[in-house]
Amino acid sequence: MPSKLYTIDELDRRLLRAMAAEPRATVMELTRKLGVARATTQSRLDKLVARGVISFGPVIYPRALGYEVLAFTTIEIAQGRLDDVVDHIRDIPEVLEAHTTTGSADLHCRVVARTHEHLQAVMARILKVKGIDRTTTIIALTDQIPLRFFPLLNPSEQTR
Image (cartoon, rainbow, N blue to C red; front, side, top):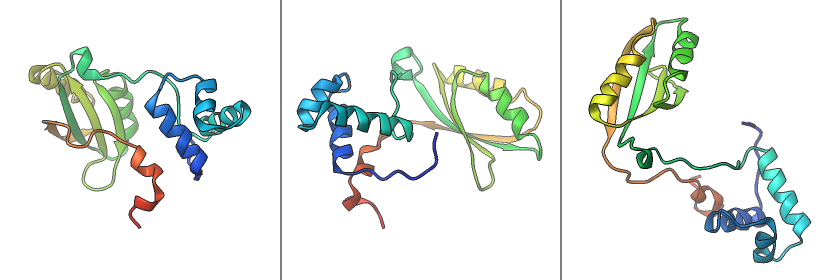
């Protein structure tokens, strides 16, 4: 993912909102909605993709696949063992993402499971690698604010 800052203008914002409202809209449909030339729409889309602002692909909902439990796990790792632990957990399909962090934990992971018992089995599998000193797991009960990005498109509402 590119790390270079890319500022978007009002046309980009309108394009992103139109795509969110109708994710399967064609470039021609977006062009009509925006009132710009087809080449402009395509160029904007290409730039947004190239700069890592958006990507295309299916959104998969684990809950719809039977993964009813969402948990967040922090992992404290022995010095020099980060790569070993990351290589190990990369092979565990229920670990959806992992981030290195500051503070007392070294990794913060999003984990899903079918049941609490399944979560216990996933945690046992995570712990099978040498180098983990401690884990802490928190089970999410309900989504209060689901993952969102569109508030970032309104610069007037951003915290200064």
